[in-house]
Length: 249
Image (cartoon, rainbow, N blue to C red; front, top):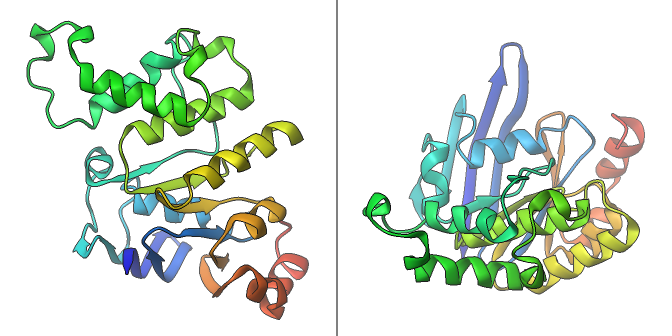
């Protein structure tokens, strides 16, 4: 069953149509990758799904309910969490505090924050610790985010997304800027999360895409040009033309 769908989703910026009538169906529990050359509209699509941008037209359906136009401040509460191309953490916070904030912000209620010590939010602390454990950073929870490596900061950002207790994880180039060893670690983390969460992945490294994806959708100049299994996408002549004859990947 589809947990996340778009129907003719479109976003225009003046004369530029960044996302053009894209219809997707993401199966619950799957790892569905979105690929395409630079400028294909992949990140704009993520921004639409997470409420950062409002669509020009089209619909977004999550768990059989329409969420088109839902503001970004509410999206995480619905069960959609994302990471970004660039690392977005609080450098002066400890790893634990970075993740605690995400766990608290997506909790059931903020009521009583001014009257309770942070330590009294045991359920929030448990979610934060579990998220750090899932990405292998639990033993560094007291370190400041600015003191860890870039690769570990990318792991921390994944922990922040997990702390929101999402049903769907939207990962925007989680291996961007990582060394080969850091990339291997990130791929192992994504594989470990596969099945536990529905994952929608944007990634330029084709070896990663082909090794982890259940299904792949290909965008080019804002439009969806192909969809299928990794084997089907590798053989698709239109995909080959988009990468080799269009904008450089």
